[in-house]
Image 1 (cartoon, rainbow, N blue to C red):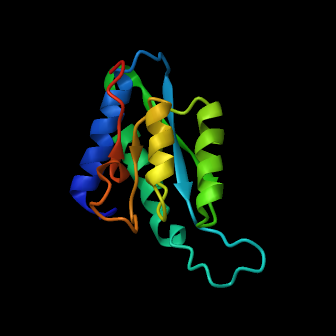
Image 2: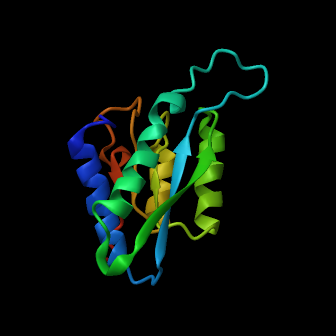
Image 3: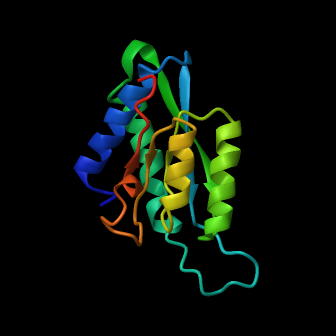
Amino acid sequence: MIGSRSFWHLVVLICAGLSRCICKADTFTVGYLTGSERRPGNEDYHRPGLSISGAITLAVDEINHLHPLVDGHKLNFTIAETYGDEEESILQVALLWTQNIAGYIGPQETCVHEAKMASGFNLPMISYVSRIRFSFPWCRLSVSIGEW
């Protein structure tokens, strides 16, 4: 569950792993894939990102101020809107990669193709609220060991 203590411990562990990555950066930016908006004319989409998105702001603030990363590194995030659409989510995964992000959090509706892309980019991904439960283990966490 996104609000559970164990979930945020996992986020901290991944962030600690990012600080050991061969990439040298003062601030690591995580791409946050969310569905918090509706496409024009789509009144059916329930926008789960509205209730989930506040947690990442709190988590990043707590990591930066209460549980600092090794060597004074900081954590930041950039938001990518998916509108709850798989094709948009796949596109956003690729666009975030071009922004040199350190990893992904999300998406919330789909994750199979996005996780495979993240693995191909050798980037960690934490997916949540997936409709596919336990059928595909890479939906929960996609990490290519690679150079870690």
